[in-house]
Image (cartoon, rainbow, N blue to C red; front, side, top):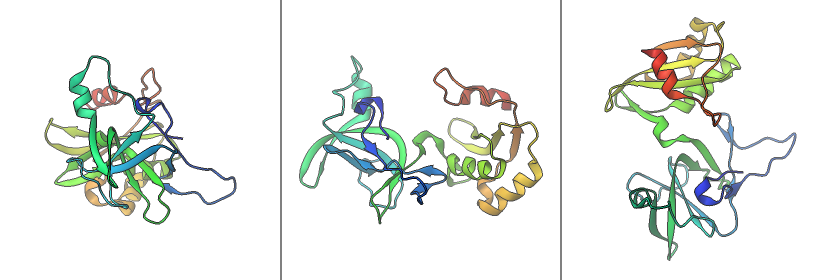
Length: 211
């Protein structure tokens, strides 16, 4: 199941069947399709709806969407918007999650957070794709970080949760799988990748390690 707190936790689901081929993208199983009374659309940065197969921000509408953040009108204006879909005007929540919808099955694929998509040398890069291939090679947790100034990201650093990673062979493998601008300029092995209390990767601490 998938869903943010702003949508009462769960609002889409994917039916998992043992010993069957599963619908996935970059090693992440599909988050499926919306529950009854929940609408999902994929939008670009201008809140225009994108067709199936294109990547954009996953936005949700329906009975489960919260009325808003408590006493935070600035954030409400940023995250909630109204839009007419199939002749019906509804209030949507912009999740901040990068996603796409399969043209054939209608399944939704979570691709990472919007803020994990960066520009490197004029190319749009999804850090999750780098992490996916690095994980396939190493079998351990990997985290890709883009570094640079606030406005220009110019290199990618890959952290691997292992101090015994074959960096040369991993780099060669990534060059075979990814465009050259997506290949990390540096790979750092760690005994353990730092985590926040929530269990998510502490990217701030990782960036401090680069410095």
